[in-house]
Length: 383
Ligand SMILES: *Cc1c(COP(=O)(O)O)cnc(C)c1O
Image (cartoon, rainbow, N blue to C red):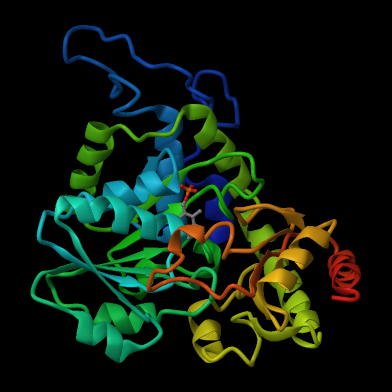
């Protein structure tokens, strides 16, 4: 395996898990579009029996994900939600989870509308307030579920501090989708589980949906692998191949996303239409120092801005940009804009994690930053 622990992340992104094909020399991992594998005799096979259980393209992708997060083991799933659901099935009825109060809307929906029906309990806390996290810990707490930066309020959770305060009976899981492993590596900070929607920055080109889980503990990996096979929320080989192809430029893209986002955030912060612009790379962000420590290479491509004019003006802005396409999702090379209150976070309305109706979320792409700022200038004109 080319997966060399001594390599730096840029090299890992291009090489981990990927060997030239031994029979043909093909430098790129083949798409093993097969459901089953011929065996020599019952139980005498080449390591593959059926593609829900294992597939060589998926195996390469899993090794790549483990390498990127500096973890021992990774598993691939059909989507970020499938990854999150499978992780939560490590729990049993009666188990308690502490959740950041600003999680992805789909995660909240899964916890609140589905998993709560199976006897799991949840307490929502502000993950930026360590006292609040501490106070929520119960004897039944089995999981502390964090996103950082959060979505869409871009608050940070101090992974190292929370991992240090977590009792032995609770795992710390970090949804690392917003930062990507290039900007933040939760396992090194003490987290037990990292999950990804690879649909976003890892895939990076808005052309594939997927998810992944990375862990260091072998027993936990075996349980998750059992769940992956037993539940079957696995990705197809074409999708993981496309995600691997995207990951080869992860470091280049994340550097540019971060540089562009900082400039766009500075432009928005100076614009009178906004009452508040939230970006961890701005020194006005309340956790700017933590951002520099926890995400030293850059603070990512996501910006939220709260508009003086409220939801009406926010919706107008989102409809008037031309380069910033109005769409859900994030993390692609192209810039997107959205209104979380009526789009991605509609499922959180009237809940403890409902978002500000005047908030506009930007996923800043890797285009020329002057073109991006000019687009925002024209869209904001007269608002
Ligand atoms: C998109 C997203 C998810 C869900 O991932 P899918 O691939 O859409 O299922 C989970 N967490 C975060 C932070 C996300 O942005």
